[in-house]
Image (cartoon, rainbow, N blue to C red; front, side, top):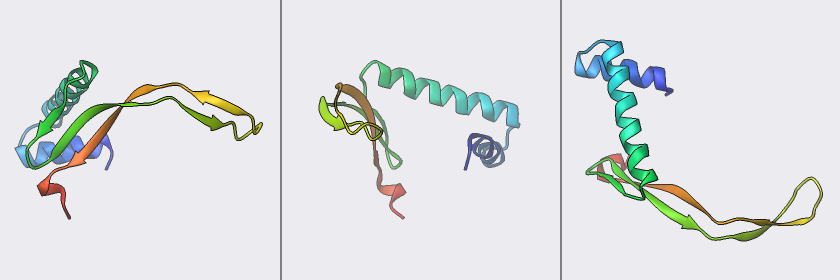
Length: 87
């Protein structure tokens, strides 16, 4: 499912226009992204939890040259599925 299909599904489920559903989906995504950028976790009971974790620096290999490289540390987003997501 892509974003357009998600908007159409939300519009049908909530009985709203696709334009309103697109605004709602965009706003929800923006709120989640802003919270994660602040380092906050976003927990939606039953759906899942988005959390920011730190990935340590590590050594890797450039596949083109075979030379060792240093991969810097960075923050990554992880998702843990909630109970309703268990299929």
